Length: 416
Image: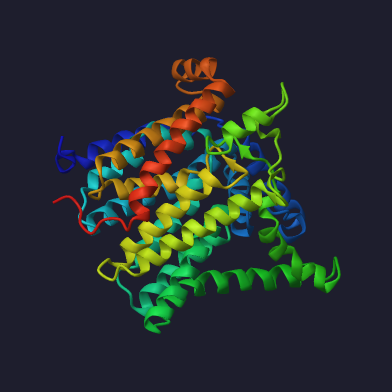
């Protein structure tokens, strides 16, 4: 069926209705942590309670949700889920706009809105919708390559940078792009893409340092926020945090009987004096740096399309190759897949992309699914780490098939 013939509004309303009923689902246990962090941030103050894992703006969103739940005397689950919906709806319409801008059918946005993978992430209460919406807004502002475009795009990017660790690779890509572009053209305009992240981070650094002066030495106070970024990869130091990636089969073979899959440390040596974590970091940075160089040299591509490709590959590569990846960490990468599916990539890319989304759904719902009850029970009753090994082998194969066309330089045209 021609995607352009698929009606948009009935699908949108159907997805909205499904999400409405999901607002009362308790979701994954992470939601309890969100509630606790919001409560304790209000009770002790953000800077006093802050312990990293997520970044300050995300903590403040949790605080707002806790405050609203108390003020409205409402179920906290409803409020936290509704905060996701506030970002989820604009994300859908931003996808519609970006798809039209690149010459693709807007109906591809329904893949995001109605696919079981994206619905399952919403149902389980993960907060990835929030920073993802801001990333899409950043691309939306890249209408051209003027200084104003880069500066506007830097604002939502900067806010995302202060929310979740998954945004860090986006900053790396923007930095590399600015360097490559300057080296080729002596044009500093893309540096503006970094202005928002730098200024917003600096503002929070001043706030944290000033707030903590009375509680600890000045140097220690100034180090609290930067260290939360530097130490982010040490929060959950395992080969895989249930992400069906390249490390899952290895962790399965190495773990002791009865231990969870995330019980294998990423500090194990895979080469002489080189840990799995260090090796993965080198590989990821090498792939991302090579790809950014290729895309930046494609002068016939619009800057927004360049960032869709660069951020798309980066957000697919990190969860598949980096250690410590969790089951929901492919979310942003899968959103970029929606945009990339609208382009004229080979059929192998499209099949692999669709299969990858299905695998992610089966894995996350096999782990934590609860509603609809019959589907959740069927998936959870048959789920096992052995089955997840199969998922990971299929998933890694799909990753190779989707990333290969991107690394070769992508496409220059879309469906007409």
